[in-house]
Length: 255
Image (cartoon, rainbow, N blue to C red; front, side, top):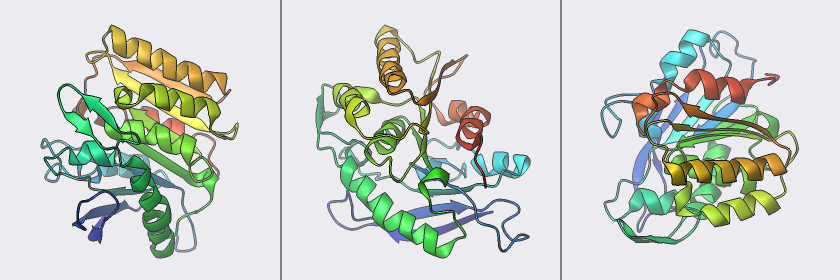
């Protein structure tokens, strides 16, 4: 079951704007009214559950997968900033950067994460039977949302113990990300899933993937890193990775 409502998200807007929030509740949620559940927070909520809401008409259809597997997991997500003035890039970039194709982008990712941590997570913990502790709180996303997931699990490791970064756009701040991964306080039980599609990986992306993976290995964290056979940069490809990244996030979780 997916609940949807409108929410104010002022963190990275030029003015406050209403947007959709989504919460998936597992199949046993109603039947076990005293049970509490881990939570996976996700970016680009409009692409996670419903094809009719997805930017390109195809979602991850994550609720269908979770219903089929009957996993005890809540998923909470929020629609991104759709402003044509680099709205999504601003919202999902922890750092300011310049790019020859998109121009100057003022990174507002830290403000986004502050809102996620102090407003959205607090709301989910009040309204739903979540397990609010770090060990049962995860974060995930794709593309710029994948970059934000890596940033969040490092910068907010006291909140998120596990992260899934699918096709992360680390070009928006590779050196700063790697520096953060090296110096941020991260517990040894931190778990990271990271992948790219074989059809999107060129020589530069392969090097970037190795560099980020090396930084995580240097910290002696648990890492699953893979190149997806036949995978590309699309919701259809990311949908097919649900068994891999969900298993990584849920492995050994006591819920």
